[in-house]
Image 1 (cartoon, rainbow, N blue to C red):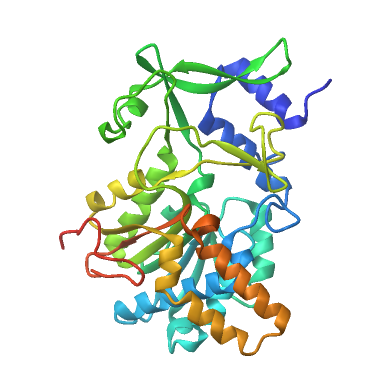
Image 2 (image 1 turned 135 degrees about the horizontal axis):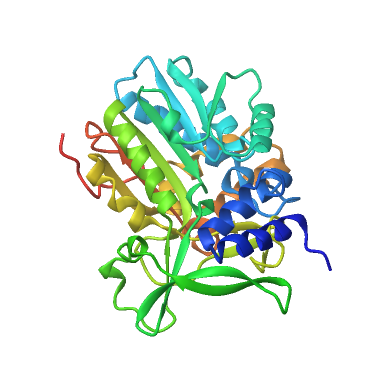
Length: 370
């Protein structure tokens, strides 16, 4: 049987360069310009492979928008601010956020919309969702304008590539992906782990045991450092919501999702979403070093409740049909209940030194020095 185009490409790549790290495999499977998952497929919604919070309930995006406007007011309502979203998906969150902030005098006039999105196809979808709005797209935060910024990311970090280290016979090896010639398919293997990865395993994770796996996203750490650096230099804050663990720990969370169900991540590259749980401890640990205040981790349920999700749903129900009201209530419950998304999903934030408090959070985890 002839492998699918992306499998063929990966087989040739492995033959030329040796086993691929999980990070390289994720990069190719998700963003290959011709055969990558985000290049070819519509992943979002009930007809796709997964559904995100903005698609579940409009109140999610509305509250994020109002959170942004409240922080803008805390900053003294600057006349120019970059409103930035990382990984905007179909543009649903931002459309809901911009609708909600129309009630805040001056915010819409001050905000310039910037979207950090690597997929050309998804940029077209976002353009359609945000008609008549001036949008600037970026491949990375490095090209954002030098002005105060409010940055938002929902399920952004979980899709960034990870490395996996596996502890075998008293040493760390890098879990990798090779080509099994006898089975004519991708297969797990290991290779030497570079010291630059091994030194990132924190002592707080505890002593490893045989077979333990530790996941490291150098891309996520670099992205968060760039975000914090921009906020330190120009002012503002960032809010990030994702699923994961609040403390660094051993475990294999690399997964594939297809048609809302778990799938074999190596079976059909390019046909399923690939993600891993976010290590929030690793993300937050570098924010103080960049001179910013770090907030979190708090659960999504606690955060949305603090922002008044129940009150907002009650407001919307007054002008809703019975069907719409039921949908609003069930969507909100799904977002905040512990058995649904309320506990697994967590929220962190970063703010410039001049912003000592943020809506929905307690005291900062690391207080920066001005």
